[in-house]
Length: 183
Image (cartoon, rainbow, N blue to C red):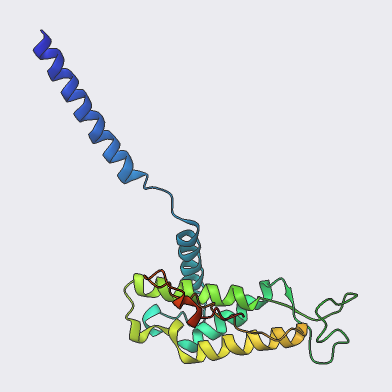
């Protein structure tokens, strides 16, 4: 009798592990925030291409389609970008409202392009034909960054990496020859 009981337990645990494996296949673990955003961005871009007249196949997509997509997204932006003639142009903290347009922030566009660039290759695109890696896209992003910085009156400065001195394996005071650079 104890032999059958052991057999039932073994079969029961075996059945449970099969069920949990099937459950795991049906309900994969949740995606990370980055992966969720990447999937959502990829689907949005695909929908944008399908809505073009005539629709654009992903294999026919080029940097111009990506630039048009980025300009299209501007209408949903939340960042006030003052125009050259605005009285608040160049002021980091404008004292009042103005009629200047809302745009997508440079940082958001830069992150979006990074996610779409990765998604393109994950979905079978070749790195050498990736429209999101085009030089035209890099130039566009640089222009957006610079114009938004100028409109706010705060020039963009790339952050420098701090250098950390290498520690000597000896206990002598040779670390003095490696001063820490201040940024």
